[in-house]
Length: 357
Image (cartoon, rainbow, N blue to C red; front, top):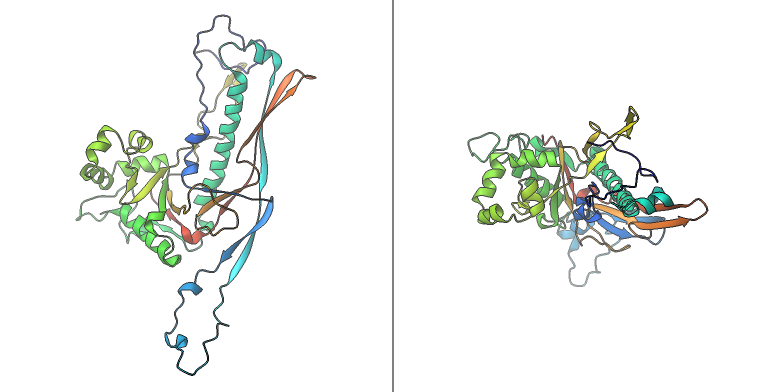
């Protein structure tokens, strides 16, 4: 196999084009992130969002305090006020650049280096965005009381790797018991506002594979009325064909967060460019899963009530793509820019399940 080289006027030119170009650039719409976060435009780079207390609307200490006898004054509402707090946020601007010389662009016959580099920068921006959101989502300290191990949630049925569909097994329905208990706690913590239908489960590819290999999940798919359709078509091609999971389990949609992450730079050996090997992983770890809500869909409205667990505030466009022609230096400078802030808006609308594997 030929050695890798950087594009330049001398190595971007191929005398006899083969017509084949191989590149590993992930399109923006292929990132699972957009399935479980909500984007909210903000008019300023610095602002506040208001978190309203969740208890007063469900607080009933005694029925007697609301009595209004004939001839008495109406009950006063001085003690019935909703509390709130304002949380400051500030978006952060990032730029993902690339530069190519005129000669490189003009002499490349087989591939289009400008388009490839712009696609690379977009993919890099989305990868970095995903990594920050996943880190936010998998940090237990961000969840307060809304985190527990799978074994705790399922009352000792164990982690998800050993889950079984055998009622006599101590690991009986370990996956489902964990999910439904987390959902119950979310529903209770939000006073019934967030229901199971609003939630979705986010897992890594490694955890997805481990779940798919358990008898709990295998037999669930096999015994489903749609089993034949899953076998022939796949209810969700991304999940069924790649990770062998149904698109939902007992009413909970599943999102496999399979964004890859390379954490090392190129190295050289004997004058040749060597790509990363061991420093290649997925953004999401296999040892935890998150049950999150996204009420209202992908696009939120600034200043309106929101019940989505994870939000991204963005000033300007989500991704702004620009290319500047530089005749003086005979080159093109490309840039992909974002100005955003990732926020775990309310931990009570979601739950982090640890110890899944």
